[in-house]
Length: 206
Image (cartoon, rainbow, N blue to C red; front, top):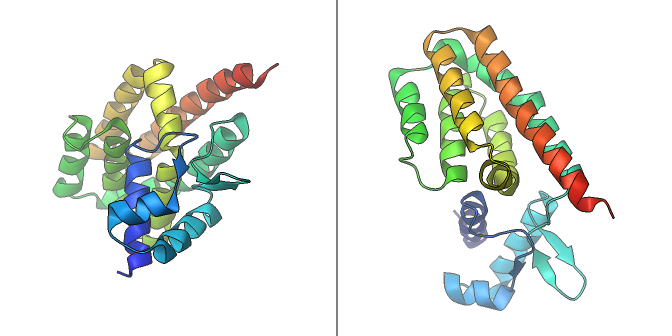
């Protein structure tokens, strides 16, 4: 792993865990000092992440974590609805005891923050699909969606519904019922997307 890759991995982990909140400014000199590297790999990592839509560059502010908005929520959830059910459909019949146990552990809260546990759960159910590129793309989406997941779960009261949907999804996967698993996953994503779009629309309205 190059220094740039290492810096990017650290920052993506912080985004995924919700440690870098929307509007946070990422100062190159501070990051370089904290990570023990020069500013050159930091700058390249920030530029890479901006190219992936995980960060934005603002005039006179440099790199910042994007603010939440309706367009962002609609885009990321539409992308999740397009790809994640396909991964799940391929994976259901191939899930191992280890995959199911890892998903259950994530639901039990044994894997860090809410957003980190959310990704651990979904990754455990998708990994058996055998699509490495697809899984990497979904991981990027989960990094991008993390602040929306926190908003939905903590501020909009969606955590209980999300937990119940996760349990139902895991049950369908254990039973090898791919059709039910896909339905539950789509409902899970659509419910969060609708709640977020409604809330953010009201916030953006003058």
